[in-house]
Amino acid sequence: MSSQRTPEPPLPGPLGQLREGRLPRRLTQLLVGLVLYGVTMAMLIRSGLGLDPWDVLHEGLAIRLPLSFGQVVIATGVLVLLAWIPLRQSPGVGTIANVVVIGLAADAGLALIPEPNGLVAQIALLVGGIVGNGLAGALYIGARLGTGPRDGLWVGLARRTGLSTRLIRTVLELTVLVTGWLLGGTVGVGTVLYAIAIGPVVQLFARRVVVLPRSAPAAVEPLGTGTGTV
Picture 1 (cartoon, rainbow, N blue to C red):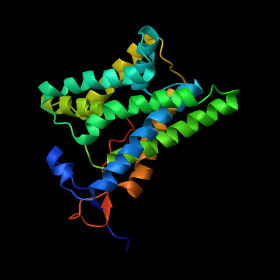
Picture 2: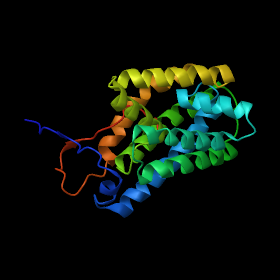
Picture 3: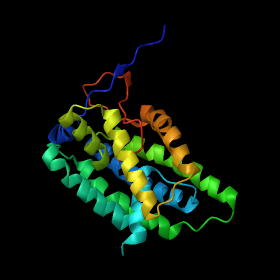
Picture 4: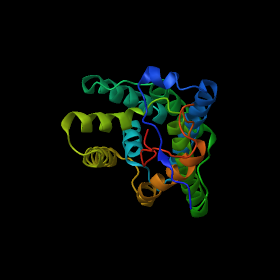
């Protein structure tokens, strides 16, 4: 008979997150996850085959504003985080780091990754970007140091309005997708593939990289957002 997995303990508040133990390991994993997330965002941009909804918005804004893609990611993260205040959401260490590190890593990735030469290279960047993004999301979530600003937004809105998280998230992501597309962001087959694949990829890696509290049982089922959105 196979052993039954118990759910991963819910994420505590900011101070509770720091008291869960194994902090050096978790901070290192957090930083690696955020840097990888930014670099894989750059891979998806370079593929030219489509981005996830929030990055469609980021790219569209970068086209219209005198800012780099990474600077737009940082500015958007700050604005979204400010929206947490009326929602009474509390950011963790990972939430704050998310706002800065991902944007810097994305700009570094764009500076280092050349434009692809041909469709095969584009597909390789797309697939590698999605898989790497899923691993990055799992590392970030598994460090248990706070949700990403964008995830925290729909969680907070769902809690305050009483509407389902699925409905809130769908409306938010459709809104940013359409807005980004109207601004010139790239929507394509990669957008669809990302939406289909990212949840299973994150869950696949999450089982292997989650850092549990010392008091948690050994056999657990990791919690996840179901996407790579941060």
